[in-house]
Length: 286
Ligand SMILES: Nc1ncnc2c1ncn2[C@@H]1O[C@H](COP(=O)(O)OP(=O)(O)OP(=O)(O)O)[C@@H](O)[C@H]1O
Ligand SMILES: [Zn+2]
Image (cartoon, rainbow, N blue to C red; front, side, top):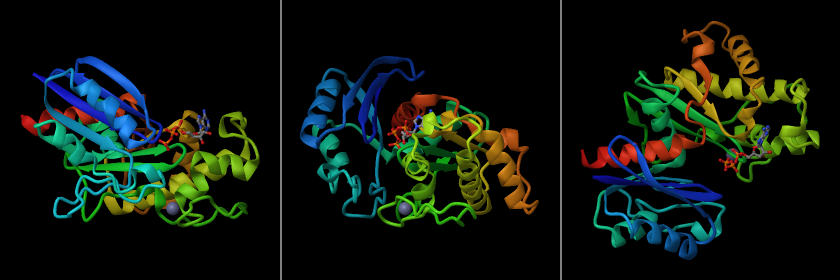
């Protein structure tokens, strides 16, 4: 039996087909342009494979509310060609198989829990810090959705006392994504993130914001592990800085696992999302 997966990202779609052991038989990467073009290539891939189910992890925001008339749609994305696109509908119209539908970051969180850094845990939060900040939440082995899906990148944070930068979020200005995603580093300091030296003050400010956010997630969700990925997290000096800042800001209020085992780099790297999508596809029919 074969299973399909689509990790639908803002820059590229990764499609893969695997067996029940996640042994990938074929995989393609398709640029994210407009739905007509990108989906034609997606269909060309899946037309060649007889899959029992498909797992989709999509960039968002998306409608994950099964009671909603627009369940399965991408909703208010700034990628205008994809706004209000009925992604799930397009797939189920073409393929008569069950389709699991969630966000790219929820899929990555699920992948990390089952096969990555959080193996053996029942809960984890996955955060990616890249062009934007997004996150997925798994509690009790289940992806958390409510009316919609969590958007952990857009929480409000207290300003770093030395930070005069206004923030880049088009919706909220200085929300977490506005002050801590990759583009904010360049806009605040005038140098791209990967060109700032590891000892630059920028990383203290970055760690302060991320630790503050992790404190909020800890207080609200109490996950067993916080797994972090995305381009900015390639700056590994951030991990000790975040842990120290977290400890200071939390000030001993709630217990967590030892911080070296709590705030950790992702285990699957770029494969977290597609792994999660495959797992969701397999579970859809087993
Ligand atoms: N090594 C690095 N150090 C610091 N910043 C980096 C590094 N690599 C990439 N970035 C920053 O991360 C951002 C790109 O994020 P990423 O590589 O995760 O890709 P992305 O898929 O575009 O992000 P997203 O998942 O948010 O859409 C850019 O702002 C870039 O400057
Ligand atoms: Zn925002």
